[in-house]
Image (cartoon, rainbow, N blue to C red):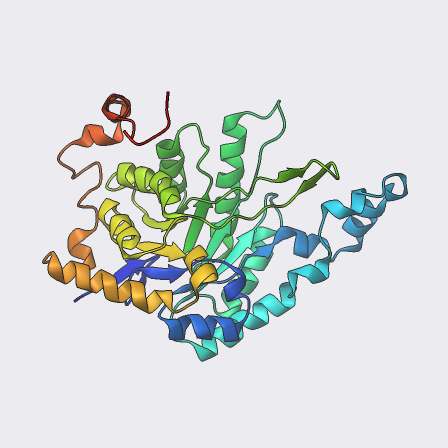
Length: 337
């Protein structure tokens, strides 16, 4: 069974990758992911705040006036809680490249321009095979237009593309007013791949302490339906590679990702809950399914159920919304009045 695929110009032995997570912080951890069966690994993200927090100027800014509010310092984590800093991050890339054969993709996470080029260059020099740019941005200004938010992503991509020659993937939010148009703009600016989608971690409220608290919930397979929809729509229309992340938990999830047109499927939550061994289990089940359904290769199925190729393209449009509502039937055993 030929499970080979390509992503960002990199040849992979199969399409199941490890996405950025606490499981890919060090070279030793990346080695374990390779041994578990990952075709490639995205390192955990290097955050803009890790870089700026090292500068005395930001330190002074964060501390200025904090005596007036005991909670002010709690908005930013201590630098040490990231475990490794910028220099160590580069060292781990270099060490990983010496110890593993699978591609190692670095990840930068930030929102402001000006710092990306310098560290993108250092990441390339450290030996990373590619770079994932995660513009984790939540607009909260009422005077900021949608086009300004889009330009932020485009500026970051242009900035990094000018400074490095390794492939660049953009990790996107699902909340653009026109996802197809944004994907097209990014591909025109040189994005080698699009990672769909970033999960925004919404905070919860502690009503007893009257505090906003972080609340990380692992994904479920249901969550893959949103990136599944958009990759199906974009396949064949936008000239770039696609990575489906969020909601990959079993072999059927990976197969669905391939059939709508993804080059790779990225997995983390399943590993965090059930261990790295899930890689080989999913790949075995995937190959078994393909054999039973007479598929010779991943490439044979890629895009076969995209909007471009599916028998009923309206399934990805407004008509399907009406069909779903009309077809709903309550469970006869439910307690509905």
